[in-house]
Amino acid sequence: MFAVIKTGGKQYKVRKDDVLVVEKINLEAGASVDFDSVLMIGDDEKATIGAPVVDGAMVKADVVEQTRGDKVVIFKKKRRKNHRRKNGHRQDLTVIKITDILADGAKKPAKKAAAPKAKAADADTAEKKAAPKKKAAPKAKAEPKAKAAPKKAAPKKKAAEE
Image 1 (tube, rainbow, N blue to C red):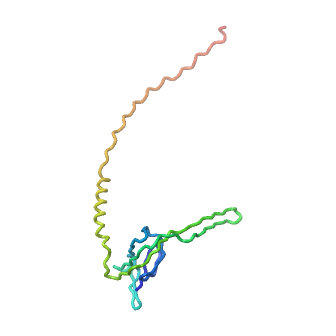
Image 2: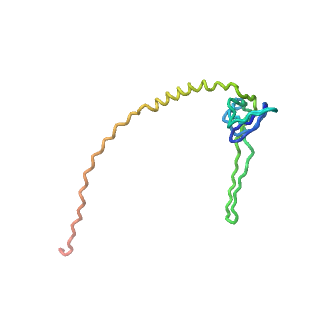
Image 3: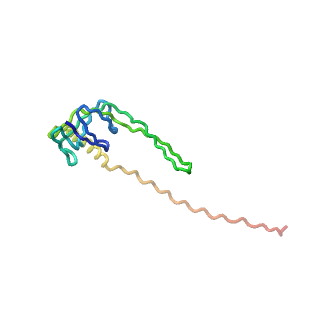
C-alpha cells in the first residue's frame, strides 16, 4: 500500500518503512508525527484520490533526526559595475520513518479530547485580559507661570556732560 502526502509545500509518495527527508518539523527525535493531508491512497489494484484530501486517511511516522542540508552558494554579479554579492544557505531538514498508513475509517488520534481543556485554559486567560484595568489618576496640571516682565533697555549715557 502506498500514499501520497503533502508536507512542507511538497508531495511525497510513501510506503510503510520508508525513510524520508522533509522540510523541518518542530519535533524532537523519537517523537511521532501524523500527516492527515493524504492526497491519495492506493495499492496495486485500486487507488483512492482525494478532493483535495482523502477523508479519514492518515499516515503515521516517527522522527528519526533533525539535520541540515548541503550548503547552497548564491553569487550575484553585475558586469562592469564592480557589484558582487555572495551568500549561502543551509536548509533545516527532518528525517522521518513511515510507520503506518491508515485508510478510510481509521480512528483518528485522541488529540481532540485534549482540545476542550486547552479551550478552557484559553477562556480563563481571555477573562483576565478582558477585565478592565484600573486607570492611573490623572496628573494635576501645573498652573501656568506668570510671564516675566520684559527687560528694559539700559539708559544711554550722555557723552557731552563731561
